[in-house]
Image (cartoon, rainbow, N blue to C red; front, top):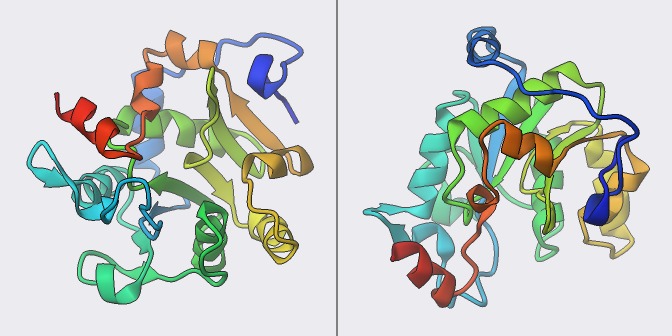
Length: 222
């Protein structure tokens, strides 16, 4: 497993991992063995309303997330309540209800028939397809169970690619009452995309900004 310095450990050597746009094009044309899941089933306690249906620039956060995911693959599903989301895309529910995002990842991987699974949170509206393609390309070339970006604020586990084998690790943690996703990365082979790599490839940390509160939403709108 390779980890970063600071919040994310350290790699032993520095590699230029920046793929060209041609690499992105080849990866997408090859139709990778990939599914995408939007985690939309959070409690939204701090926001005070269901974040999936909050509008930003004329579109709901759910619509933005679905459009982004569908730019990568046709195999897109929502993780959340069937009655609330099934009219927008095929929807699956948590097997371990009210256990946070880790339960959503677990449910997605248990439902998936694909080896690689892109997990996205509905409340991260500034992601772009080029960033997702970058992460997917790394996941395709790595043997890791998890391929995850890491910024100065730490891991970004809700914009990451997971192989189906992570479901067993997640289930063991959920049954033990352990819900922190990052803590599980030490127990599986993890490919970390460092902040320096992301910046060299033209991706700013602001892409990972999420909307948790009305104040966050107001800042995003202005």
